[in-house]
Structures are given as structure tokens and as C-alpha cells.
Length: 403
Image (cartoon, rainbow, N blue to C red; front, top):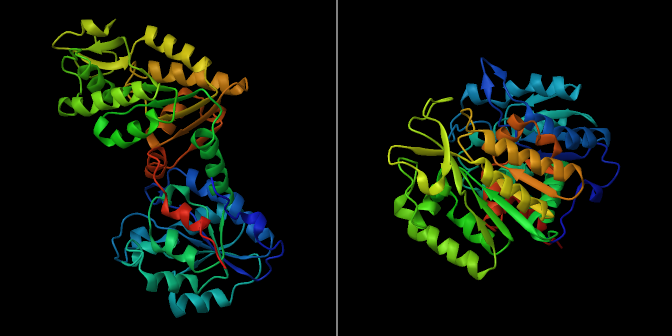
């Protein structure tokens, strides 16, 4: 991965310098309160370090989908109190993210102070990467720091446009994310395994095609595995299956063969006639014994044991998506079991494990092992696009040479 500037490349003494920090404050709210502060906490190391170094810290973020309209229920003013509580410092609110009004408010701030600027998406130009808005935002700062990997796949004014107009740096969370991803697929220790799960092949075709040329073992689970099983002539009964994509599934299997990538599909499965918690029709069968009125809802124990054995031969693991319908017991069993094997190997120092995506994080938390993985990314779309091998505009902008 090319070099990018980090906070270490900024002057150590930033007294009075205005630093625009793109963070991801797009947190879920319930009854007017933040229901999951994970993203706010992720921003703290960068925010507090810059404040301690004397900077005037100006936080930029989107919050919800206001589509260019001013929506009081999506104002970042709602985040001032939770940010104040988490930082232990006074956090101001600035009623715009560009323009004269914002500039005047910022001009009264002192060294080390922190402010959250208004929702960038209140401006229609944000999602269009409008050069005029980018210039307006950039005019408020002396430096730009991007600490929002989760928004890095979007070429928006606050994630990409501003980075070309000011000296630009990766924040601590962005730096950690990029280093972890480089270790996982950029220049990994081999052999490399990837676990790709989830409901539909259609959402991850590009990911799978990219991975077969990058990894040694590709473990396919979740509903998407049924499409691959059908492509191999297996009768999957009433299971979720995109039969129209069996041709693409065959092409991925062929590409894997040519790339010497071993594809692992379940050979025993947990089935039921109805999708419900602990259904009476629950049974574990060979994959060729699924009845016409049954659906596959999880990977079976023999297959999980074999997958664990495969992981024990690997040095690097990338994981996106659950192996079964993990929200409904007992169809979380395979995901939990394999996650615990991966966590134990990581703790032993024999495996570098990187996982990402909302469902994946939820599954690892459910298994109680998220903290044991080498790195867990909360990014959804950005993590998937990285797994597809695509350039992320918010990252690429940090790599741009400047004169």
C-alpha cells in the first residue's frame, strides 16, 4: 500500500491551528439518545490527541439521510452532549459546516477546543462532491484529517473533495484500519483464508471473484452457499437460493480452480421445515439428503470441524458475513463455533484475523470473541468495496502527491 500521511506527520505543536477532522458520527438513536456509541468512541483517540496538541478541532460528519434538506432530527447538535460526556471536555456546536457564519463562530475558539460542525449532508452538494462546497469547508481549516474509513468509499465533499485542498492526513482509526487491511490482503502471510457469508450471492459476486485470485481457502456460508450447492447439482429444497445465478456461481468455482484456491462448501447442513427458533422439524443431514420441503439454515458440525482444521493451516483470515441465520437460535451454532476457533488461533499468535461488516461484527459480538480478533472493522460498504479490490476515494485522496 502506498504511504499516506498520519498525525505523526503534522507539526507536534498545533497551537491555534484549525484541523478539520472527518469522523463518522452517524450513530443510531433511540428516544433521542445514542443507542450505540461505537463510532463516537472510535473517533476519540484522534480528537483527544489533536486537542492535547493545541489544535482547534473541528468535527465533520454526516448524520442520517437528510438529502440536502435541513432536518432538526438529523442535526449533529444532538451529538454535542454524548461527545462532551465521552471526551470529558466541552464540545461546541457550529451551525454550519461552511460559510461566513461558521467562520465567525470558529474564530472565537481557543487552542485545544473542540466543536462539531453541522451535518454535512444538509448541503445537497455534499453527496455530489461539489467543488464549491469543498472549497467552503476547506476555508475553515488549516489541515484536514480523515478518520472515517466507514465513509471512505464515498467520493463526497467532506470525504474526498476537501482532501485535495488542504494538507491531508489519516487519523488514528483510519491508520489502524488501513494497516490491518494491508496485513490481511495487501501483503498477507500465507496461506490466506476468507469466510464470506450472508444471504445473497448477488450482493457479493464482485467480492468472491476478486478473492479467488487472492486467497488460498474460500469458505462460503450463509444463504449464498445454497446457490453454489445448486450449481453443483445439489437439491436445496425450499432454501433461500438464487437459481438464476448458478451460472455465475459456476464461473466463480471455475476461476477458483484455475487460481488454485480451495472453495469450501458445507457437506452437512442443519435443516428445518419452518424458519423459527428451535423448530421441532430441526435435523442435521448430509447436504445430498435435504428434503423438498426443508430449508438449509446453518452449516453442520462435521463441516465446521473441517473448516476449523483448514483455518489451523492458515496464517491470515478475512471474514465477512455469518455462516447461517445467526440471529435465530440454534442457527448461530456454526458461526459461533468457527469464530471461536479463529479467535483461539489469533490469541495463540498463529493467525492474523480481520473481520468487517455490520452483521459480521454482530455475530462476533454474539460469539463473545470480537475483542480477540486482530482487527474488527465496523465499516460496511467500505469494507466490502475493499474486499472487491476497488479504490476507495476517501483513501486515495490521502495518497495524492502534493507539491
